[in-house]
Length: 320
Image 1 (cartoon, rainbow, N blue to C red):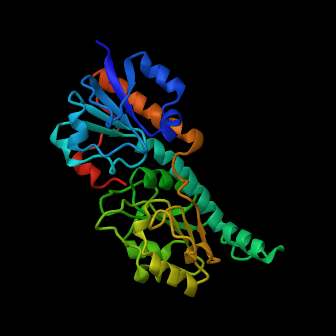
Image 2 (image 1 turned 90 degrees about the horizontal axis):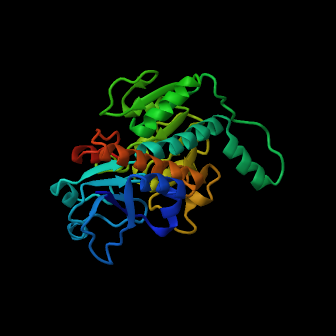
Image 3 (image 1 turned 180 degrees about the vertical axis):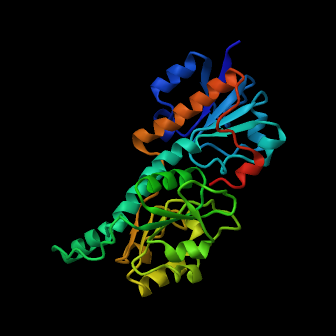
């Protein structure tokens, strides 16, 4: 009997994550159906592909999927949709975070190089002056030190790429073991010694506002803070005060707290801050990678093979 695979991804993302080509590949092995938890139950769905705009998988939603065995999350973080009811009912979960990590790592490494060239500050200064500006504050890449906070999927990718480029890589992650090409240090040491400090930790009770006023004060002259992880890792009130007092330090924030800063927030106008609207992850054509990974996991599941990207209940606590 052909397995039935439900798709529960918002309309904005459904066809860019699960492209026509990926849908055709899946269709050779399974029947794809759209699942709307507000419409009615699906007795036959064994696997559910979720993504952005998918609802939390509460007991009520799962009641509409009595045959569900596996959730394939074709997006970044899965924490927003997996509830205790998923684990209680023995539903397995796989996430495409590893595919999303590639896009974030690409963005991060690009920002590291731009930061070491002082590119953003010089560009913003030229726009303000409406004239050419002197090439000041260019640290250069050779011999630079980059600090990473968190060595999950993204942090490890970034570390490997930067080390291959000859940069010195320091990292702090209390749960990570030794990593080739990476020097593991305590958080304060990483902050104090890094020309660029890049955040890749999950946001939870232990990491909330871990980049505090006291830790911001440790940043070296001319340093750059780069956050592509979660806005809640940084105390934004402390950051505004710090950047106002320390105009030698620059901040590149792809994520903020709240996710959409209110209009008129000081970070939009400070000359040493740059805000991008959460674009580091998979957008545009990059989104197809997520659906492709989900399809590969589906085929492994149908063939009775171990999943490559399964996440456990304990592992979820340490995911982004």
